[in-house]
Length: 555
Image (cartoon, rainbow, N blue to C red; front, side, top):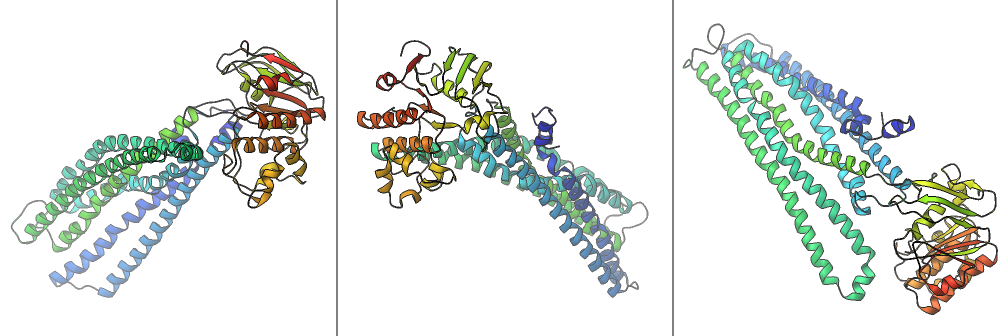
């Protein structure tokens, strides 16, 4: 059952590793069964080769054509079964990765705030390159484990039928490989875990530095930033090389064990056929057919173990990714009310009431009642809950207790989207989508944003851009000053003629003239009937509001 199915049934959505891998379980089981069957075809081919070569050595009557056709037919069957097994394993891997990626995207779209798991870089690394590390594990480890559970036992029984000495060699040397593999696996998992953490850290650092690129250039801090990147890159390189060292060392040792085992079988068979050894079989001397058959079986006895040892490192990396998925899922935060999509506007007066609201951090907000068409300033020291109050009004944050009433109705998931359709949001930090400026202002709605640009006193700025409204800005409004970007967010907020405008520190870090321009734009919308709610430290802006509500003490 997928995460979405369990969540839809109201079940526990805390996923285990098995839950994450569940979407591809059926295909993976089929792939594993077919992988084992494909390997079991080789003893039949080996028997044909041993029969033919043994007959040539002893002068027996054989039919080369029949042997060749039988060998080719079995080889073709083995190839077909192996191909189907690999296709099913690939399908299973794609299902698992797609389901996990869809879950991450869907859940992150519903989060109301950042998580303790990490920033956008960590989450994008998890949804991108880290999830891709599950594919080698799902396509290689499951089939390899199935082959180990079946093929060596089958070959051991066939060897025991022909020679107890060869079977004893297999029994003595075979277990050394999985034992050593388990020991190496513990070190490989720790190394993979450290590598995953370093990847997440580097991604977060990259996003932070890119978002502050203009400031970095203005401050002349480019060399320091590059040095920081170089240090982090060196750390990641060190972690990666640690993983590779473990992989190469373990592969070398495991290959040594397998080579010694095959060599011991070859020595036994060779000396037995020369008549130097007269033990190791159940009845009589070892025949050429049996000797050749055992020589052909020996490499295939160790091959599944070698495949599993190679896939063991994929397992270590996958377990590190699954641990990250569990940590990401456990990093719970408040959930955005509603679906966050377009909706018909909620009917009723544009009134807002907060009663007995308590923030997730335990801060108690004062009761707030705002009438339709009123302009209100929320003032108070930093960290007292002004921004959180705005987020509650917008349905972006749910109080741990208390009620938020909008348009005469309790604000919950059923009306959140319809309520937000009436809002204009002006955030403290300007943020733009990777799209044209026109799309950033209108979000695909029909109409000309010229009036909104004029009201926000930013029409001349847009006209001076290289492609006007078709210009693409960076996420933080690259190429614009802070005041220009802030005025563009004002134009975006008022474009659709909202009934309520929510502005978080709309004049912060602006010069007096620009701050007055932004304030005039907000009040112009208020004069047209929109309810205006701002959180601010700007006493000049607060003085122009109808009313001031103090949160957490004096401003």
